[in-house]
Image (cartoon, rainbow, N blue to C red; front, side, top):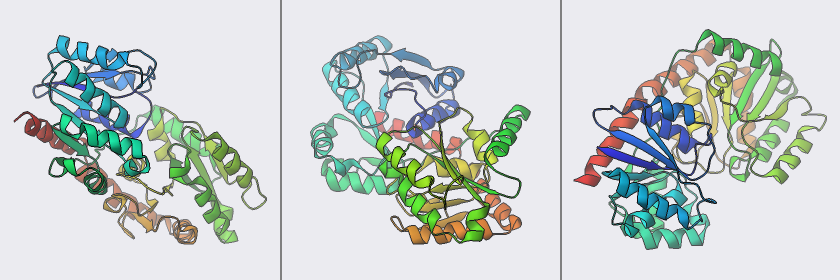
Length: 372
């Protein structure tokens, strides 16, 4: 089966991470993969190349450049692909337009967030193009329900394939980098927590800071929080930085840039925090659990499938800083043995129930159905 994957770029995003996880897990005898992008951001290029997949750059000035669908259509004809799988919303539009223009192969689209209804334009476009794709893959049941509510034409054609995680034992170099990260950002007896994600309103950095301000003095004195990710909303970053410089929080919270060594970051942390207002199936939570780290997260999307309250972490209502503070207090005050036990449960869940092999099997099943 020859599959062409379309994604905007190889930036360090959740969809891109799942794409390269899938490429690495697919059996070459089952699928021959190629990847097309229209933004030259190469964070995940080494992983794509290591998978043996071909990589094509469509160029242009982005997703709204009318040349991109024509170039994609030419690639479809030239490559004689059996199926096109688009990742993210704009690539889904482009793939369907290109396939229609050249009478190309069937298209499978992916929707990876519950925010479709926040844009009337996006909903209108999806209603217009829904019949131009065979099936839709979502990584969370909550996303599927939302799409069916907004675009009835998708009913019965949405398939849930949860994110997958691939565990590899860290190398000595990775462990050394992890130790250095921890020395830089925490003292010996500190509890070091991390947030991994873009800095934007969805991820709720101000809510997290409000919760930190509510912590007891003993808990706050032991806590350090680092936020690793790209600053999407610069005004929000400025507001958050100013708030983190108040006397009570000074030195306890900092923003850090995104990094290729994210596995080393997880290894350095004592736990992960996800204060989001909405999510689908959060990659950062899956990865943190896979590295044996407990998680404090808001109950959004399908997060509750990963964060089993009291077992792999603490689950709290969204938009509730007091509940988030209580969960953070509980993590900081938990004995190390309890945190290790939660980490072991989370690692088993991520590595077995949500392995990269299951991701590949579930995706291949959708491909076969689309071609039947």
